Length: 216
View 1 (cartoon, rainbow, N blue to C red):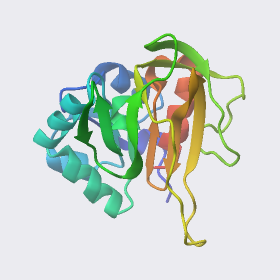
View 2: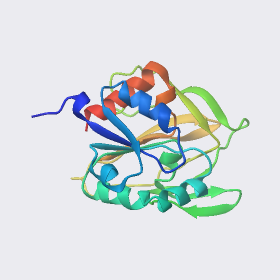
View 3: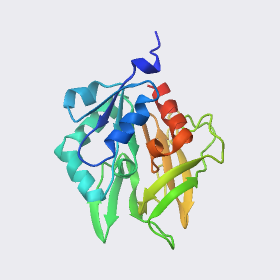
């Protein structure tokens, strides 16, 4: 029997670097059963794990590793259990982050480097549109001119992952532009992520989170 949204247990992983309360409120509005915790068993067993992130890439990675979040994310994905990253919670899923000339190893779920935005105005702060690919579940039901709230100074400008096996569905990559195009969201099996903040993106963000909850 398919679970209703209100039956879905979602953990907002609290490793010290994220707007956990606003994420909790936004997810609760979808009808999900939401808990903020860094408890290992609860994070492992939830229907969905949301990983927020604010601040510096290196600090987020240290906090995540200290809380065993890197191991939890890896084990969940190995079992096909959904994980969603937001803002720096998305950036740490890439191979590396480069800030002030210092390179920090990421989780390497996807190849690529998180680097300074290439734009006249940094940070990129405010509302922007995105270019979602056909077949996106994350952006289902949203108009092409829907706007989402961004706050970031770093991004991934080059997507390099290729899927050689035709039996494996290629990741869906959504782009936005601030100076130069950058990766705004990724849907890759059980792993989804957004550079923008859906919990701060009004009705569009609420629809997007509802879409994620609906896949759990």
